[in-house]
Image 1: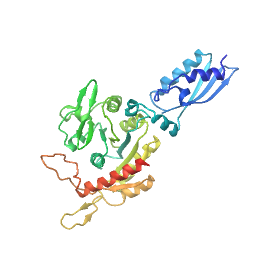
Image 2: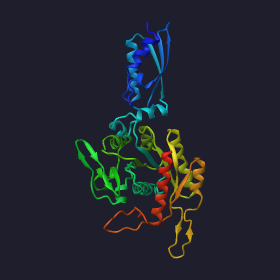
Image 3: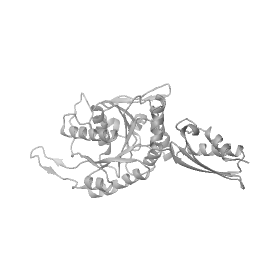
Image 4: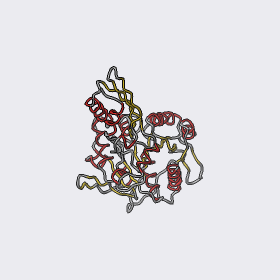
Length: 352
């Protein structure tokens, strides 16, 4: 016959798979119920992150341990530890734990750049926001997670390739940003015809096997829409903030709302909305022409109950053969200054 004290002793020795500390240390044993007539044990356990691949082995370990201790049947409910509890462990974490991007103890701020559809300039926004954050003195990484439509290396004018050393991948640094992309590992711009599970493994490598070093922010250029790859990323990450990119056109904003809803459903906070291609300004007259209409960005921000971080005009950066980065705006370019303003807003919002 098993009793509550025995259950607590057994559970207390089992480790949280993310914190690598016992459930006794984390106060992760929320409640215990023992029905003596049926020898049935019900437990509620709090862990760092729920609904992950790590949860099933933990569940099996708990069931096996309690049955060995005398339980006939076991019922388990999982919940997440309170944010303040995680924060207390984060302050005591080792360097390895804080640098593990998939650990709830990671101190890296992850910013996912999403859009409802393709063609709205999401990758351009990702690249320029990453560079703008670096210009503000931040240490920045950028993952080109748009696996099927990778474009970041070309947009940033990256000429080098990542180095693999001691089974670790070292990203390429350009414009102060550490970059990794599927484009580095595909020959001659070949199309990607892999299925979802294979892509998931690549993304997992980008998080686990890349030597990012000390970074403050990691930006993810997500695939457009709400498909498998975007969903995989949302489920992999313990937490992330999200920026939604749209054009002013009502249809683009309507579709972008789906990406915002997906972020909220997977418990990822929305930092704000960026309206790209907001207008075209004539160099001769200075007049603005609203090529794709008006109002989509503010309307989307209002619908998602978030902030409009900025409006980017339709245009093209100035670039030279000596410093070839065809999609990166110079720091003193009017659009480059707009990105710096957006970067400052992002820094301030994440500091709160």
